[in-house]
Image (cartoon, rainbow over all chains, first blue to last red):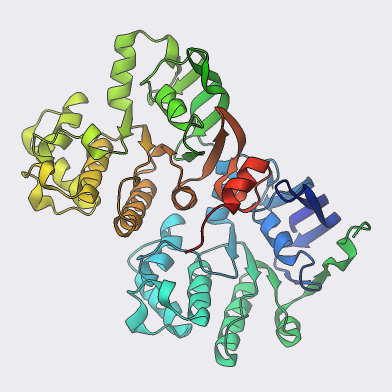
Length: 232
Length: 258
């Protein structure tokens, strides 16, 4: 069953304050992604992999085309949906892990992770145990749970960022280099977590440079080279 | 899922004499949404907020309000008395300067009760309990309920003002630079408080600010204003991360990195 569909999607950036420079990034994307697939986005650096992911999340606006998300029998085109519809989709359906953690200062790690469950109205008396288990599995020491992650190392921040999204019950996960700043041990822990999401039939789209990881988890590759506009 | 539209604004325009305050504003606000209005000083954002909250009467345009009990009213054509009643019971305004929203000569509890009395709550112990509940919810020490807010810090006064407004369970809250006059250390904590309350009680809010960090953390959607008109609108992070209009691009690229 298809869960994501892109129809004639184009993306260009017009930099009005930099002499009106036009960056034509991706052209004429037509593709479908089925429930439970794990897609690797590939292509050289700067080709638009993060841009692609951000368009799926509604964070970047395609210059034209449709991006349809199918939730049971509901179809939502996130290019022209109302804001509250996209927010609702993000709350319950699509999770996104960016390359860098972005949180309010002075909010403890454990609250940041709890927040996802509270937003999904899934927070109950068992939640804290579940959150603590996840943080321990990701090797975030107990002494750090009540601290803001803003002072953590790059790898620790990335794991908090992952915990924040992986704790939730999403049908689609968009992961932008989820293992980039992790050591080998933590890498394999995160890979196992991604695998267990796939077992639950979660659809995953991931940017990952490591061939080995890609072969281990991904069911298909989408190479963005074929969407490079001719004029570039 | 169907979310109720609670405000519909059409061609709202206000002139100060021949000077444009805001012109041809259109948007819809849905239940539980937080709308941010950003722009530099003089862009018309405060004028727009005042038109929406009933503080000034716009030159032309339409504001339709959905009532809690059902039905839609044309706000601007209501009789003055009915308008006042709506504003007192359904709406709340959080001012930039807490002293504009509080009575510093009555106790913290009295300030909250004053608001509740407007919505015909008269039982003393209930008033007091509600006061304490909201003080705690905004992370104040409820033992200070009998103290006068004149002795509170700026951050505490702002928390008290927010308690006061939210205690009557308003349908729409208007905030004008809610963290504008506060130290950054206090600002982050208050933003976090507002954010968690918003999630708990599903309140609808319109926030005016020039601070893009505030809108990123608090708001769902944005109106970007310049010279009295809206130049760009959309999902907050979309507008900030992929701005389409040249003015929004200028605004987002002008933020200083710490």
